[in-house]
Every structure is written in C-alpha cells, then in structure tokens.
Length: 442
Image 1 (tube, rainbow, N blue to C red):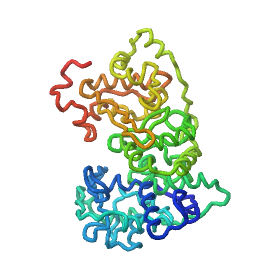
Image 2 (image 1 turned 30 degrees about the horizontal axis):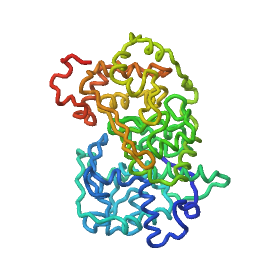
Image 3 (image 1 turned 90 degrees about the vertical axis):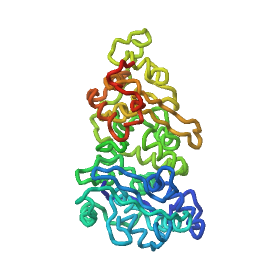
Image 4 (image 1 turned 180 degrees about the vertical axis):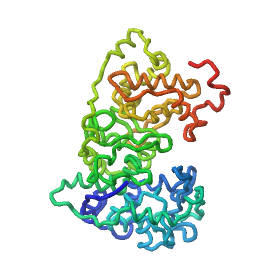
C-alpha cells in the first residue's frame, strides 16, 4: 500500500456527527467515533478479551504477530505515551522506544490522518478507554525475520511521509471526505489492494494507479478481498451509489452479502458511522475507474434456470446444487433479496480466485444483525458431507451459470488445499467424520 493523498480540511469539515466544540468530552466523543471509523477494536481485541487490550493473533507470511495493548494502562499499555509518541506510532509506525512497528499496523494509510483527528483519537484512548493490565504477547516470527532493525529500512523505503491535510481547489467536498476516510482511517487498501513481494501495498491511493482497491493479491484469513473499483464483472461497476451505501451500512444489498472479515468491519465499524460519511465513502468509490476497462460487462442468461425448472440437471454440479443450494439461492441464482444473496452476477462468484466461494461452501458463515437490519444471515457448512470433488463441481456450476463466466476451473485439489488450511480446518465438520473422502458423499 503506498501513498499520496488528496484530502480535505478536517478541521473545518471536521465531523458532521459532532458540533464545532471539540474540547473536553466532545473531543473524546469525536475520538470514539474516529476509532470506530478506523475499526481499531478489530485488531486490538482478542476473542473474549477486553477491548483494546491486544493479544489478537494475526497470521502473516513471516509468522504470527500479536496485536498490542493500546489501553491507557501505564505498565502494559500506552498510558505513558505523549501525544507526539501516539501520533508517531499511528502515522509513522514508530513505537515510544524507537522501534519500528510491524506494518500489520496500517500506518502507511494513517499517515494521512489530520492533526485534528489525531488529537481526538489521542483524547479518546487516554480518557475514554478503560485501562487493562495485560502484557503484550511476543511475536512468533523466526529469526532473522524477527529482528526489528530491518523494519526501519522497510519503513524508510515504503512508508509515506506524514502530510498535512489540505483542501483541493474545486473538489467535491463529499467525494473528498469519502477519499479521506477510505485512504486514511478506513485503511481499505490494507486488504483490497495488491501487495508487492516486500509486503507493502503496491499503491496507496487512486492517484498512483488503478491497482488501488483492485482486490487483494492473496486471501486474508482464508477470504479474498474483492475489487472495489468500477470493473463490470468482479468489481462494483454495476452497483449504484445506493447499493454501496446499503452494503456498507448493513452488510447486504441486492447483489451480495458480507462474509468473513468484512462482517466484522460492518459489525464493529460501518454500522456506527453517520449517514453523511457512509454516503461520502460510497460516492468516492463510485468515482474509481475500472482496473480492467476491457472487461466484458456481465449479462444475465436464463438458460440454466429454465433447464433446472424443467428438471434437467445433467450439467456437472447441477444436481448437487439443487440438493444443497437451491432452497436458499433458487434455481435461477437470484436468491432472496437482502437475505439469501444472489449468486447470479455476484462479484465474489466472478472473482478469478475462487477461494472465498470454496471457503464458504466448506464452512458456511454468519452475517450478524446490525442496526437497521437485525436479522442474521447464516450460510450452513457443507464440508462435512460434500467431498472435494462435489464442492468443486458446485463451485464450477455456480461460476458458469446464469451468465456467470468466471475464469478458470475449480479443481478437487484446490478444494483439498483450502480444506486443510488453518482458517478452514476443523470448521467444516469433517474433523468429526473419519475417512470423509472414502465415504459415499451426497
């Protein structure tokens, strides 16, 4: 992820959700909102742990990193951090002791956070968060990658310098606000932008090229981060601004539903954001041109739906789809609006990497209810009763039906690899069924 930024004077636009007075408790309240916008709790809270006390295990290509305690505890947290210590850690990746933080902390994005917002965040973490005495866990990274000093070189090579936020003349303030949130606190590029072999994001903003937000280069926690640009097949080119707003707010719309890590973003962050900020994010994302402008636009095709309606399930995977999937997603692939997502034209289904589709067939997932959409959406796991070839058959059927023309063929060996992965293993029910592959499967 790399950077340039556009911006917006946040000291003047500040936060639409708050009054102009940013002193005392108003500043703390503003900081709480900003911490929500940045979804700080997601990484800095372990399952069942106290908020911001750290300890969450994060798997990276170099080993396991555990998030830090960022409560104001003076022994184990950041209670002794001055404002300058705090802003250096957040925007430059430099800890109080001078060590460079692992870039699992997305400080390249946070380099664009305004001084006004940084002061509000500092006020919140020092005054609005409960101190927790919990020491940071040591990283599980083998030597020599565990040495910290090379990270300083990485930071100088790839992390952007902190730049003050300035207004761009003549820029739409709504789009500028959306860009500020997406490129900065929202750090959307941390997942949705491809990374180089040296682990930095290839670009930090749209000004650096259309690779920005064009989809992650590899799965994160077993899920693909999809293309957020205007691509016609696997991007958001067919989504309206209202479609985007609905997805951001509720994790569901007429096209798809959130799953995997995105469910936590909706649950912990996006559902609490103001309507004006949700609209600004959507407005900005709709300005992003496609990464692949020559991509053939999606065009629906009802021939498979008509064949299934007549009882013709001769296509490979069709029978298994009817038995296991059609009750919720229907034989026409349209699903049930905002409850069971459509598979027809779904960007996740059309993604060139089928990992997410395979993953969700194996393990299922749940999108929790949120404000304004209290009903949870649950996809059951099928890995316990479908072998690798059956899962591959269903995935290929879905990726080639109703006008879907996803590239590539899913193989049983791909499914087997994902089934064995740390993110999936033990979550399919197959751990309780001995000799799954040797048994007759539906």
